[in-house]
Length: 128
Length: 411
Image 1 (tube, one colour):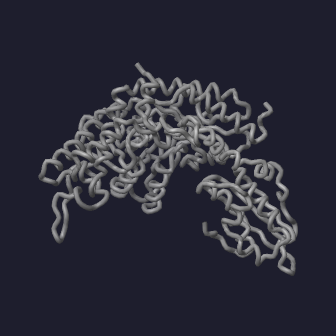
Image 2: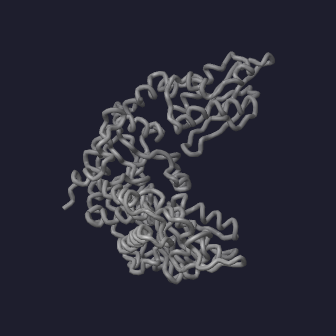
Image 3: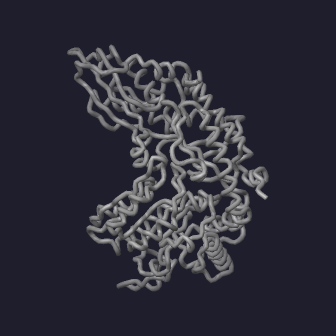
């Protein structure tokens, strides 16, 4: 279980995130937290006139799962159309991470999805 | 003679393995303790042999179940040094006990502008009921601050008493820092200032000898499930004169003397606060838990925990990047919360779990305390009568494994 959860890919994204930072030119931005565990994610997204996500970065702090999930999700959505990303659900993120998660850790893994959707569409509550 | 291996044999859960083949290292007793066979048997015996509803039935089973239920109350009273068992109210847990006081005493006796005094180290269960009451009644809440080493600041406490609080409500043992507070001293000073005193005993009654009448408190709350008993049953101790003056809590059966189409009259204490069918088997299981702990001896349990905690404190202190919160080993109960490098407690707990080690991660229902200490979240280990130095050794190995996975292993 541990070997799955903390496999190299997750730890690599946690330790050396590719998309961590802040953008100057942003048109979509949101932040949220899981108050129970203290995970915090802020996201800045740049969408061009064709509805394509051209750049996306996050900042925040929290457990390895929440932070790696943010980096992996942003890696996936850059270059995609906003309409396409709209259909992303919990299962999509779980598949991206490629790990099995209990209900408590699922909240950590899904916080970035919740923040991304809120940033793009103003949906604050993602169904779990 | 305290023999841990004999004690562990009483707890069937230690026969199971975790994640396939790992030995269970249970370091989360401050959240809830494991249960000895004796407690399970007592509840089983009731359900298989003596079960019926209590207090009303005129038949043999009802009488036997009632006798066992009331006998459990008497034994729990004895266990905490209370002579008059009508001062012992069965509730669901510590949280409900505190809520009962907030509703039945607080709503009746507190008025707009009144002060109440809590501390910075309280569990949410001794904060939120008072926040709710304060909003409703317009009360002011003050907090006794903690010192840098996690003790209550008694100088500040004395100053805050000048505001003449109507209530001083505080925890006996902190569930995060492990601090053992000077209950008798705080109670005496509070009484001199005219305040009523409530103590949250959730982390003390399971772990050390508690003599409530000696402490002098007005109300004292604790739960069975942290002391080898079942969930769903707890105690509110209250001084007779206070309980008798209070409003009832929940309305329903058992708490009434008489009901007409127009009105009702309230039963005697403690039944006045025990509306509806009680958790009968759980109360009897609670009685069995008290018998179990008594047979071993609370002082012996406390001494054993002190020894294991001291050993853990010394071992954890040798781990680079590990910061323990709270007072020195000789001033705390069997609880150690810590931070490790910049690794999130959820990650620590998850990796320890994979090695069979159960700990708690987060803020342990004490968010304001973590805020005060400027700690996002912490990892907590807690010890009980069944823990050993081997458990501590496994914990230390587990923590090094966490450091290795997170690349903090090159120490």
